[in-house]
Image (cartoon, rainbow, N blue to C red):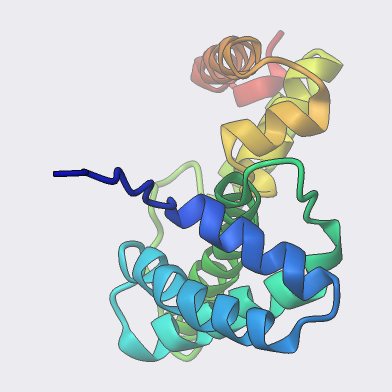
Amino acid sequence: MLVVERKSISKDENWARLMTLAQAGDTRAYERLLRDIAVYVKNAVRRKVVDPAQVDDLAQDILLAIHRARHTYDSSRPFLPWLHAIVRFRLTDQLRRIYRGKRFEELDLNRDYHETYSEPRTNEDLDASLLQALDHLPEKQKKVVELLKLQGLSVKEAARETGMSESALKVSAHRAYKAMRLMLSRPGGSDAG
């Protein structure tokens, strides 16, 4: 009895083949690829987002990003890392946009909010003290705090932006927070010193 071993093709190899064909103008291959990765993308989004309406919107946005970036795929390289990079970046961008909007949507400007701190320091005083403390940091630490806390970047994104390693960025952030806490704990806030 002759046994023929059949080599199974991986998802990555299959999608790489379909994308290569699509780049060469094969519309059927491209339609098949989009159908296949649409399910994959939707499942990836579903793991990060609970609201079904947002899942569909985000998945569509990611598929459009893939469509716009399809010319950047290099057929000599694996397909899944290319796909994951697009999914991750678009998902991060969209989630950041959603959650930034949520913070402001939930704020009722007609409501009288209580101060977070009792007298003699008000929220406005604290905000001014924080900005002064930030201004007293060395330039590198100041940049790290601005990227992480004011712009809301992830450690990975901030590291890329500054050219620092993620470890070095975390150390710099830790030192900056410690210095700011010290400045704010002094009588007179960051003015003392």
